[in-house]
Image 1 (cartoon, rainbow, N blue to C red):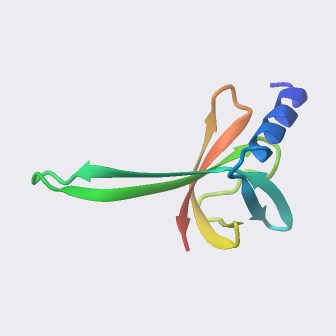
Image 2 (image 1 turned 180 degrees about the vertical axis):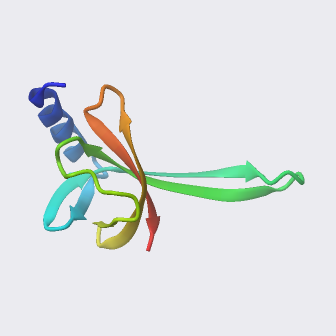
Length: 99
């Protein structure tokens, strides 16, 4: 992974129309959030509404937080549940849960 591709990934993510400020410590970067909702079958023929919030962060924008670290996205505090490298490794997907 070249530094140039990481910078390009950061610029592309920041220009996403729904990008908001992600704050980790004293560093703030614009990142989009992927907010998915789906119905998961509960085994009895019914369904349970499941929600998943994740931000896409360019690698190198922050030091990758540990699980259970607290971050702020668009003014709301979240706990980092997991981090996963995506695509060619130029960005990460951080799964978040509200505090």
